[in-house]
Length: 514
Ligand code: GLU
Image (tube, rainbow, N blue to C red):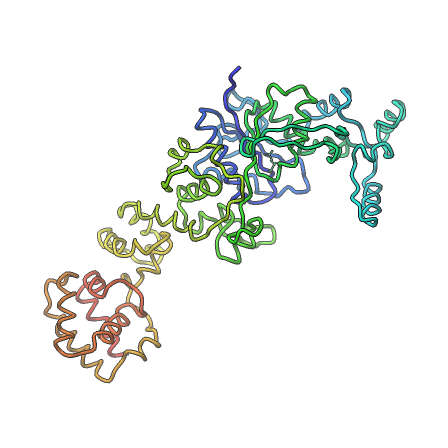
């Protein structure tokens, strides 16, 4: 039977989504859309100790900003709690599915694939310490379970007595002693692991009546009819257990295929990309700004001025490439070009310069008109109310040097307001005894000059300075200083023609009197 493609992004709400998580969501989205399938969001919040308020809303908002909102599980910006035709598998928050999981844990016990374990956490901790002292690692599996406190050793009566007497028990998976688990990964190919090295993972806990990640994840992927699981490499060690769980439930026929994505690495390739790398090297590792409970704020791509399209494009290339030279892809083009086969097995190094490059490419593609619209609010916030035609000319002049719209102001402030101070180092270097006289002559020349355009001004200024025998370098640097305030900015003639004759002369005069 051909099943409809259904993939899910299943984050735990433990904080803001790292860009690696957004990439996982993106690859899931691309895969779903390419196959005409569904992209679901499921919130895996069974670990209440790691729950962070606001994280769920953050995830939903981040996906929406990226333009990859889920088809199922979210409506009106919220996780769906009540089933409807479109969201037939609700609720999509695992804590609200709590009542579902116990029977699955018990089914495995009844079939002999799992057992009850009564060991207290203190006892297990003591065993861990004892093993450590001997240079060993304690592992709860076939090597130790016969000596521990569990239903495999106790009589039925004893087990029942303990189950009813306390809630300090858990259901553990009975990991086979010696089984070669054969697995397939869509990116990594065939994988084999001997189950003898693995532990008897906890599946369900009586204390809070909650499943652990492993049980909830498998049960929900099954119930939600997931066809492919695309997730981070950190879950690869859990894959044998997941395979064995599908087998134990008898769900092999509908078992999803798996693809594990490699890690995002630090720019130097040495280790996993962390928030600290971003802080150290000056780039965000989160899609949106995030303020934690201590009031510390972390940067976000959105607030840093990235276009969501550029962000998605750069993320897609962290671990995937189309096999051609083409690098700029719209979301629609990514949907067409993406394939799991072309996802790399090795870690993808994050390159902050390349990230900026992507945004610059998108900025360059924007029309001047739309950039005017983006820049206008910035200008208005500074009390500058210039007409669109003027702003458009400014943008045409600076666009090539900007990476973000956020750069516009610092690249063009002098085209809107006269400098309020002058760079003293530049002044000392280029201000000569005859500078005031030269500037006066230039003012005289500019006063009668028409047309006051860049094309006319450029040759006229340079021949004027040459004819008079002045030093081109110092005169031009001083002019720039008086027009801009420092040694940055567009060509002198460009600046003059844009700000106009009157403003040019008044800025030079002010420099003379300062
Ligand atoms: N809740 C897991 C996470 O936060 C999901 C892993 C999976 O996709 O199976 O990464």
